[in-house]
Image 1 (tube, rainbow, N blue to C red):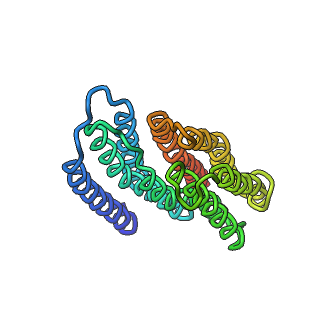
Image 2 (image 1 turned 45 degrees about the vertical axis):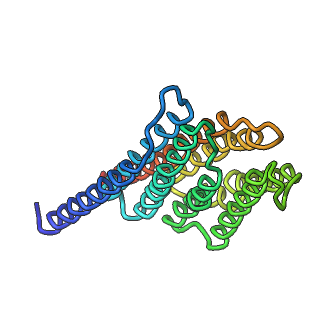
Amino acid sequence: MDAYTATRFTRRTTTKFVVLLTAITMLGTVAAETALLAAGDTVGTSFWIATAMMFAATAFFVLERGSVAPKWRTSMTVAALVTGVAWYHYTYMREAWATTYAAGSGQSPIVLRYVDWLITVPLQVTEFYLILAAVGVATAALFWRLFGASLLMLITGYLGEAESGTGGLVEGMEMVMFFIGCAAWFYIMYEVWGGEAQKSAATASESTQFAFKAMAGILTVGWAIYPIGYFMGTGDNPNVDGLNILYNLADSVNKVAFGLMVWYAATMDSADHSEE
């Protein structure tokens, strides 16, 4: 092992050790403050599953970051941020649910959920720009269009869902907010399936195209679950249990799978270059 390789190995090992130590410390602190899961609490179980999946995915993405080509590392970092931020918020969402469930009225932590989405969803959408920017086929304008559309989608979703039935400023406008949010989502899908983003991806490497198409599929199919949850959580008789189970499972699959597609493409690309 030459000096350069030894130095890289030492840095990677030290980084992994620090990350794991920090994560374990944070995990113990949060877990110690969490209410117990009640027997028969199906919704609470889904919160615990989602929390565990987010934590495991974050650790995996961080540990694997040093094993991929440098141009993929920012994308791997963002994938870890998405699941890491989600894990942090889920520890509090499961606390809120378990506490209110024990009191006899399980309440949906809708504000915490949208705070999480306000950070993680724009990061996920930004991944499309990042993987294209890594191979030099993306523009700053594309980034701002995707970022802006994701914010519009979330803000209108929150206004429609959080205020439903409470006499808020948008009372009676749930469907208006829903259609505006869907329009923003459709625009994002247009960009990744037929707009500038898709055209840029068509000129990229095979691994980049794989990641792009896989993430586009998750955005189209996986994110279609959220409008269903919106309808379950609005109206005169919202289904709080079904809403939270659906959102928890959708978050777990979509965020983890999103990052895994980036990781898999990165390993494909790194393996191809190592053979050259």
